Image (cartoon, rainbow, N blue to C red):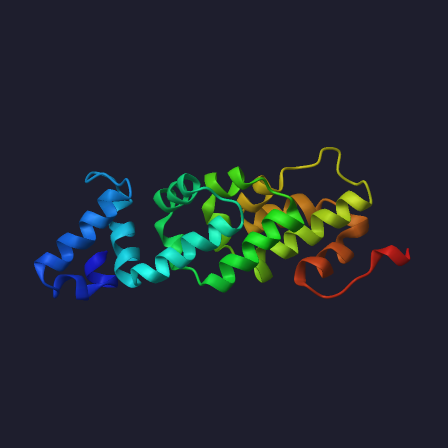
Amino acid sequence: MLLKRQPTLFAMKPSNLRERVHRVMEMGFSADSRMLVHALYTVSCMSQATLERKFNLFQSFGFSKDECMSMFRRNPGLFRTSEEKLKLGLEFYLYTVGFERKVLVYQPTFLMNSLEKRVIPRYRVLSILKSKKLLKKNPSFAQVLLLSDEVFKEKFIAMFINDAEELLIAYKGESSDSSDE
């Protein structure tokens, strides 16, 4: 994978490569971890200053250094995500959805989902269903994010035949104001 994604690693001086491997090992990765390669790739893609800025971004939202490291160890690729996307995701999940930080520490991949194409459309659909009291049980938004698109549409749009059009419009992102009804 490294040869394909980061061929420059194989052309660099052995001392530079050792330094990067050492940095990743200091971040808590073991030599037999499958995530070691991903962490090495991430560390090799950006400067130390950029990586630190991203850690600082998370800390500005209340994450501890340990929580940031846990997120990095779970999904090093998260830190290749742009600072702007991370900030927008953190704001949405923490302030709009109301996630506790521990949800994102445990599932940092949520921050890699497209807000426009996946997260916000699902949030809008659930909001409509909740406002109309159509759900027997309020599902965890974290669990909803883990569903495939097909399963989500089946469980949260197609099941509500009388409201399917409004839900589909909300899902596709077209404006619909159900408060006028």
